[in-house]
Image (cartoon, rainbow, N blue to C red; front, side, top):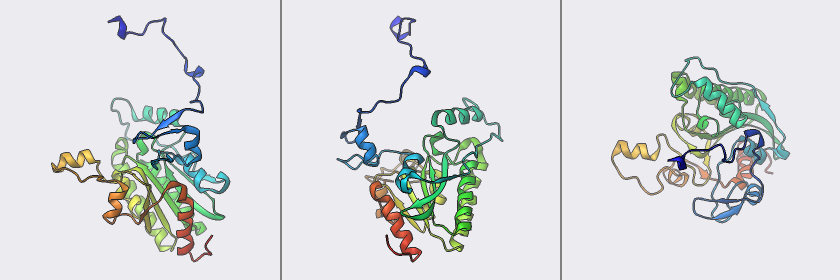
Length: 284
């Protein structure tokens, strides 16, 4: 049994001594294609052989969308509280602290404004690394404030969803964000400003049931999981075998819930082309 016990003679590396993943390593996509991580980064984190879109966060999306990666972050210091004093295996306050330390983020969404192909654009982007991209009060508030900013400045709005759904630790307070953000998007529509919703892997739960599917145009990345409940839950509930590719972006497009699927390396051009057409601007 001593084989299963760590001994004092084992290698012990303190957190302070650990290094970041070095360059020159390889990434293996789900289909088995292998690509050098440095090449993957220069290819928008898309595997060049099979076009597999690796999950990325707000940092990478802002680099892709904003000219020269220059932008102004909105409400950067807004962070969640624990009004319900929720405790499961650990307290919600502890989960928040750990997520912030692990990711360097304040919550599961970042909002920013900057030039994209020379024109101002407001972007809200979710980060799955922060408690599964769950939608809590701060997520709803930051998205709402970003929409308010877009209305005041008369700017188009892009929402990038990547979420496991509502944050259970905030219960009804989390669910309220569905209505809150939907009302704000209605105000954006009344101001006759375009709203583009980009669904990335995964877009599920209350996010799908609200702002992710309310775009003037709804788009997605290839292979993204898009749905309310996950495939396993749907299968267990209905007792039916699911069609091949169920809830993939391609399946959702075929059934009329998306307008088109866009490769990440074409995202900036496609988003700006649509905005130019809607706002009657010269094509760039």
